[in-house]
Amino acid sequence: MRMPARALAGAAVALLAAMPAMAQDEGPKIDTGDTAWMLTSTALVLMMTIPGLALFYAGMVRKKNVLATMMQSFAITAIVTVTWAVIGYSLAFGEGNAYVGDLSKLFLTNLAESWDKPFTLGSGDAAVATTIPETVFLMFQMTFAVITPALITGAFADRMKFSALVIFTILWTVLIYSPVAHWVWHPNGWIFALGALDFAGGTVVHVNAGVAGLVCALVLGKRVGYGNDNMSPYNLALAVIGAGLLWVGWFGFNAGSAVGAGARAGMAMLATQVAAGAAALSWMFAEWATKGKPSVLGAISGAVAGLVAITPASGFVLPVPGLIIGVVAGLAGFWGATALKHLCGYDDSLDAFGVHGVCGIVGSLLTGVFAYGALSATAATPEGYSGSFDQFIIQVEATAAVFAYTAIGTFILLKITDVIVGLRVPEEEEREGLDVTQHGERLA
Image (cartoon, rainbow, N blue to C red; front, side, top):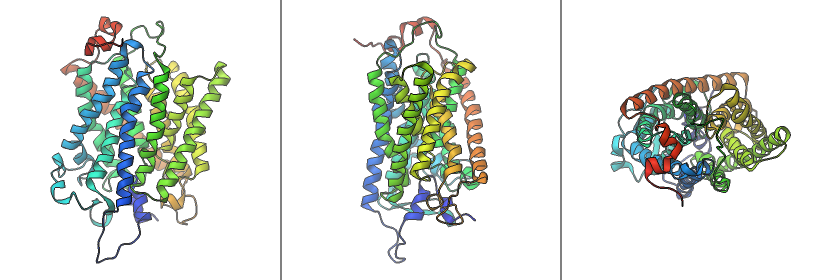
């Protein structure tokens, strides 16, 4: 029998279980400690996109596309910020129905009367009172909405028009990201009602972005010269710096999803660190065994693979299962970025699907295996494990639903964008590089 805390959105599951009971006559109050942690976490997650992801991706493309690649992350940050404030947040966290939120939070006008009060997510029996203001909650969620389409750009690096990127990002945020976030994290969402566990975005962020990236790579086709030209990274030092920023920022991503400064945040942070380290090593040793040398690119990719896989599980598992998830993720990411890509013949430029898609799926499924009762609040016995075959099947259903919706929706949106402005730059512009042809600038 499920406990009431299962009706919380994503990280808010933890909050209900951990919050002390408040005196009936006092009502909920803003907790300055929880708010301070969430403000910090929000800044950390934003840092994951700019400059973290911008540097990580820019360091892996050729010199002629470095500025354009960084511009994609920077522009998406601005585009999604405005889109989220205007309509995205309302569609994701408005009451709505099982599939999408309503327009009650359009343009954030609802904040005029509630900006200085604790935020309550949902209504009725499913309502959850938090100890932070809604301004902080929506900003934290905004940073998730920002990084998700930014991750997709790794799949089509070097070849999409900037005008197409702008249009596609707006459409994708409104029609793909926001509904999926509502399904998984809002108490009214049908995937949450199904009982699926996703602490910090395994399905909402990583499966979502990874699958969209795969569709983008297939629709746009391979880069000019793919398989023949030298496409070695321009500056792996930039990529290492970016990966380091992603690793540190991920603590805001995962531990911040506890929506408070408490024990669950600490456990999520520990599980995240252990998984990242284990995945970096498993990828490194797999590459060492098969290719003779452990590469810098492999090590940083492995760390990101572990961070991706632990994301849905981070607030629901103990450290040793976190380590196991990390080891599996490193091997799965190495396979997805090498064997799978070459076997299927698609050009996922920077392995958006190979890392985020594959490892997001791995993490989502393994959450159903390793979820710990006292953390996940799903076990009949509080001290036991809640991971079970039934929970695993629920994770499979949720992951498959997001996979299918994102794949079909992304394909349609790409075709719409293609009709409006065209998707891909001409071959001669691609050969010259997007820095010059799209932005009129170049590295010295």
